[in-house]
Amino acid sequence: MTTARPTSRPYGSDRPAPKRKKKRRGPIGTIFSIFTKLIFAFLIISIGSVLIFRFVPVPFSAYMLETKIRAALSGNESKIAYEWVSIKKMAPYLPNAVIASEDQAFLDHHGFDFKAITKAVKYNNSKKAKKKGKKKGASTISQQVAKNMFLWSDRSWLRKGFEVWYTLLIEVLWPKKRIMEVYLNTAQMGKNLFGVEAACQKYYKKSAKKISRPQAAMIAASLPNPVRFKVSSPSGYMYKKQAWILKQMARLKREGIYMELMKK
Image (cartoon, rainbow, N blue to C red):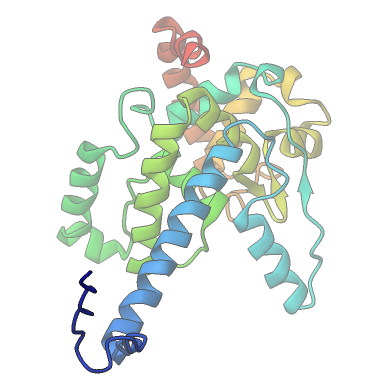
């Protein structure tokens, strides 16, 4: 009877394999890892917050919070007048008035009015604009919602970049009706005054549901600078703008803009 010869094994093969040392990240790798995580977190937070406010009434906006903090730090009255109201409980004159005044291409564009942007750039580079020292903006209602809801108020390129991102999110995730509803509720309508319900109660002692066409046009005429152009004491310029808005509203009514908005 033959016995099996033991197989030869290399010296030390019964010892556990040595653990591989983890490669340490260099400073560039660490920075890249942190940056990637921050980007991912921002995407989750931004998309999640926009999705939530697609359905939930807005308790406050970023601009309301900024206004309150700024007023408190300066020692001024910081109480915010604000009351959320459904677009179904607003007079149809209000959406028509702000579309007529602020963004007549609202139902057609996807967040950015490139024709208006081109015109604004052309005007702002003209001698007339430099002589007057005034520049024209071309922000759509969607852009204003993005800025009011989620961002701060300076005019840096960084803020503009975030504005583009949030505008795209809003246009993709919200219907036009919801964008208008949030705009009418969160737009500044006076000093520490936000939304059409609070504005109608303050200026006309009535709800947004019972507002008249001329009153809606006057509120729209104060935008986008309601602190300078006061609804409570309209200037000659505001009366002229109101008359122009009323004419535009009549045209929008004939075109059925309000009914089209409520379907979207």
